[in-house]
Amino acid sequence: MDEPQSTSTRTTPFNFRRLGLILPLTVVCVWWDLYSKSTVFDRLGYPRGQGPVHQWLGRLSTFQLYTSFNEGALWGVGQGLTWLFAALSIVAVAVIVYCLLKTSAGRINWLTVALCLVLSGTLGNLYDRLGLYGYKNPDTGEPYRAVRDFLLFTFGNWPWPVFNFADVFLVIGTGMLVAYSFWSEQSLAGSNE
Image (cartoon, rainbow, N blue to C red):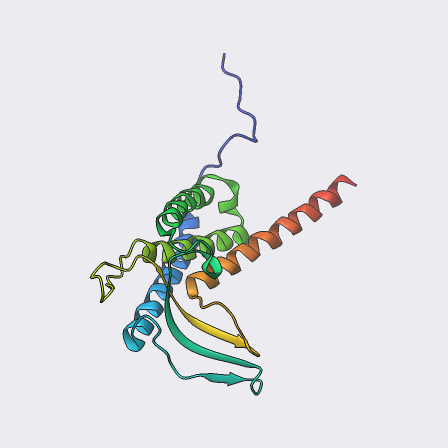
């Protein structure tokens, strides 16, 4: 006779109504990331196309559109490892989709939104790492296989690394996951007292 599975290893059946949140949020975020990259790069040129500088708070902070290619990860770490980061992105997409569709994370709105934002950022940057946008290096004729970044902020004399909306989605989604982990730890600690 078969013994019942423990609840800790059992997957949660998927509620297809969740797709009403997952699909639109992911599609809109990926679309915005790819659209904004294409628009800015087409208008300003690449790489190192520059838009006007906008000052905030006097001269304490500036914002500028500035096109650049990043063959690494966050803040340019791992330059030249595009294929490694593409492979890791594919694994991340698979894990996130599994979590959304097969675990209880897909039934908690906060986690669903957080995972959709991380998924959107990962897909937007994966698209770039695979060189699917079609830009070619004018010197070699080879396609660029790098993430297109274009948002540049400076604070005083310190420039923040150039980034894109996929990065924004990744950071917000990751922040939401970290916040959730603290909330759930606090609620578990409170229930054990």
